[in-house]
Amino acid sequence: MTQGTITGRRCAGSFGRRIHLAFAGTLLASALSQAQSAALSPDYITRAIADTARPLEQVKLDVWRKPAAVIAFSGLKPGERVADFMPGNAYFTRIFSKIVGPEGHVYAFLPTQELANCAPQETEGTRVLRRDGRYKNVTVLIDAADRFAAPERLDMVWTAQNYHDLYDSFMKPTNVVAFNRAVFRALKPGGVFMVIDHVAAPGSGRRDTDTLHRIDPEAIRADVTAAGFVLEAQSDVLRNPADTHALAVFDPALRHRTDQIVYKFRKPMR
Image (cartoon, rainbow, N blue to C red; front, side, top):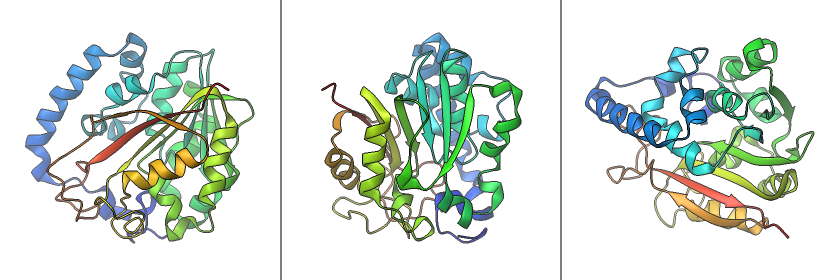
């Protein structure tokens, strides 16, 4: 997966990072929506999103990614242990760091497959956290995706816009069954597995993961529940009924505005 080739969200090259001018009207509406969500979120989430150390290019994504709403839905709290799987340039990792605070910890997990096949700039934002004193409670972990693990039991594992990548050519060989089982083992009883991803057409299963970079939510549900998780809830905060599911997620006509599923799975207490 090389820069400039649309082979995965993390390695989309300049085309994947373009923001189309047609988004201007939506940008304003989304900004208002994000402000409303922030007003309803716990103070620790609002303060984390307002962190002035966050890169400006990431702050600009807030209007689309709606971190206040999705993190509030997840239930992440100060003092918890959370892993951000395939964090890219650490958009959520930085926010999590400020939410969990000094009593908590964040593990940013970079798969070796991604590092081997993606341009370095696709993950540089995560790798620099190893020497950034403003995020001392972040540890960067590197291993194969299906060997996911952390040094301690976790309250939450989070993956955003990249579950579909587990099936893509740049992530092979990845045993997705083994990955989900590894996440299950890494969590405390009652722990949460959050999955956010671009929605594919109903009934399409995993057909579009390597072309449109989408996945049928039912395929995610089947995978994750097979590992022992229970689907506790889903949020419609990132749904977009205007998305026909026919375009690649990097298409300028739809970039950042794809229809997305937000799933909250829980590991049973027993």
